[in-house]
Length: 460
Image (tube, rainbow, N blue to C red; front, side, top):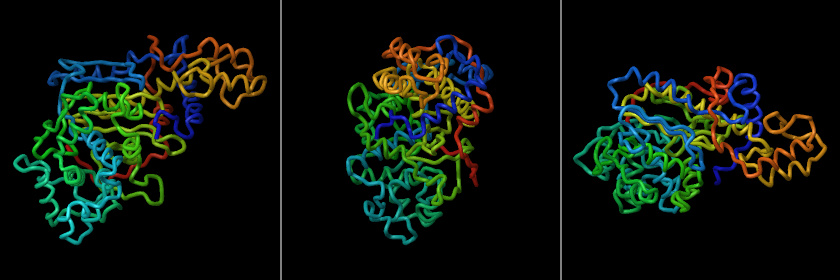
């Protein structure tokens, strides 16, 4: 899977975004047609000014070429500051599991009972939990257990104790979404069994070392004897952005393939059946998730396009860290703080939507980019030459050419004058207003569903 390709329906999405921008953000771009990110963290700045009790926080926005769109730190924090990231761990842990799936050590439908025989001793469905169910909160287990937080036993013993727990299962596997860390812990036990390697060492070997990450481990919450697979990591903005940047580049880091594209496909697949007749029932969501759009192998779906395809994925932790990947607009974000997610999640959700609006403005405004791939190249020239003198099947705007209604010299000049340009090559210093209700509501996604039954604060 190549996640750099535009999702189905992306041209329609961009047309609608452009229409929203034209009506809601008439001054959002300057004469260059490119948006500014200078003020995107102003709401965070205002709130953090009231929080003298915090050591600090940090925000990084970056495109998939590795160019910084916006970077801001508060207090003592910088890119290297390490804090516990709680459930933002789930995406990195999901990458380890997905890697084992990609290399054939496990399969998405591998049953726990086929790897850990102790799960076959109680006949209540626990043996039938699969890898994909355990990492998408649909395995049917309860959300939490003191076993995953014990620091006096290894993970393998904790998992064996869970296998013998009489109250492990709350639902039949596969039918209900119940957020929590128990099933991911069990999947970690499966990974240890098939690789004969401890989970912490496995994560270091399979993910962290290939990405050049040295400050990330499972001692943020608990220890590495019994690492909390779903919520124990500590990390930094620098390390988390390395992970997300590799995800945004088909698993490539510094010209080396470090994450298998098949693993990325496994992670960025919805396992909840959202929006279909086979959708899982919702039993429990964390407090931060007001809009449920589905869940992958570790991360949440944050937005879908008009065709229903996921276009944004994110992972958030109870202490405030949020990392996200915007596939539609080609950028990533990491916000890191050591506090409480409920105090920051709405602010970060607004930043995520605001960033999508601003990058969409740049994508829509790149002169000569008539095929919408963010680069002025041969494909754009072909469109002009093949359609010369006819009405185009894309929208002509003042930002891309003079809108005469037909393809002519204006469009050819736009391509020739901007040959090789990409979006966003740089960002101007024009003021950009906060997202309005129309665009914000649109960019948060279509067909949203409020389905929570119970809520709570979960570390993982």
